[in-house]
Amino acid sequence: MAAAAAVAADSLDWRARQNQVDADIQSWDLTTLLKKIARQTGWKVYVEKGADTAVSVKFKNLPEDEALRRLLGKLNYSKDESNGVARLLIFRTLAQAATQAVTAEKKDYRIANEDLVKLKRGATNSIDELAKKVGAKVIGRNDRVGLYRLQFDDDASATAGLQELAADPSVAAADGNYIVDRPAPVQTTQVPNSAAPSFDLNAQPVANGLIVGLVDTSIDIPSQYSKYMLTPINETGDQEAPGAAPTHATSMLETAVDSMGQYPSMIQPVDVYGSGESTTTFNVIPGIVDAIQAGATVINLSLGGTGDSAMLGEVIAEGQQKGVVFVAAAGNVPGEGDVYPASYPGVISVTASTQTVNGPITTTVASSEQLASYANDPPGTQIIAPGSSVVLSVNGQEWLVEGTSPATAGTSGTIAELVNQDHISLSQAVLMVTKASPAPMK
Image (cartoon, rainbow, N blue to C red; front, top):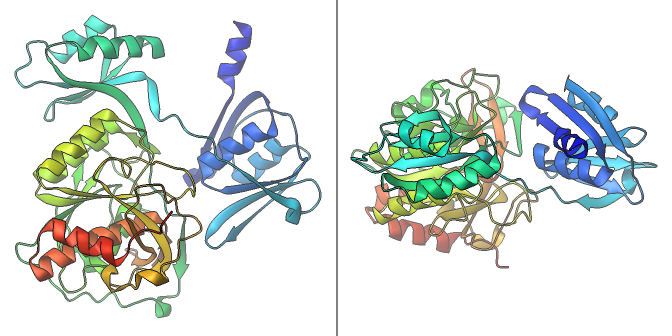
């Protein structure tokens, strides 16, 4: 039991947005440490052959550089950027000797001691009765959607409870609850205003044009873009505090609008993160439902890392049956493989090229599309789109945003632009974009 407690205590919590790191590590080798750093930071990590150290540290709220010094002991490190990708080099002798790539640890997105339950309409049992029956407590309620978040004492209880809940006649669906990482560009860099495109937007939203649902973070939009935005929906009850750089959703809204040219749609923002470092499928599922109920027929999901949630996949499938198109980011970790929601059947999965969004992506010559070094490109990815976008913050500063997120938003905008301009169906627009910029052949 003492050994089990020691293993359970080992943890690393890297909060990049706050530049703070916590560690409580009894005994890790260097490979274990670097795999976790690679996953939590998104850095590409390289190590010198033969470098090793025993890691045994405990600290809280240290800045990244001080945390690295404590974690790595006598080993040296340096950080740089190559082709827009942040790198961490670990070495004994010279930085140039750090040539062995470290594969990021795969994250288990399922929250071990939680389940989600969706009740049938007119259910005879209340959620409180069901929770009591399976030995759980209700920690999240969405009565409007009929979705509830249950917490158990441990993983085994949650697994047993899930089976019991699924068999109950009052339950429409039961599933685990999954973490959804906060979306983040590969990098966001200030650019000289004189080098950026004009943001004097004169095109008015197309009357009776389709609506694009933006399921994302909080939004803080510059005045030039406000005419394209419907009233935001918030699933969390709180909001991300504005900062110097635009929020992720702000960048995606601007990118989508910029890609629509003279035929812009209205955007329906849905905040599923609030001020949290991450969210869960408990918020993303009603976020998608609310976007659809608000009239959105294209749902932009510039986020990823949900794990394979059956309940989220079913919600997307139900939307697809109603004619809704889902466009999702393939992810910013090359070679990661399937990333959800992009890898659900029928979802338009988008990876990123080295180009910059500048109008509809159908104007791009497909043969010139070079896969960005940071971009994931798993089997089933349909579209490659420009991975860089210049956006404007509320203080007038312009920023270059890079990643599969802007590639996805640009794709959603282009699909909307084609429908609005040419009065074609959504399926025709998707086919045109896919043919114009197909993902690289495997």
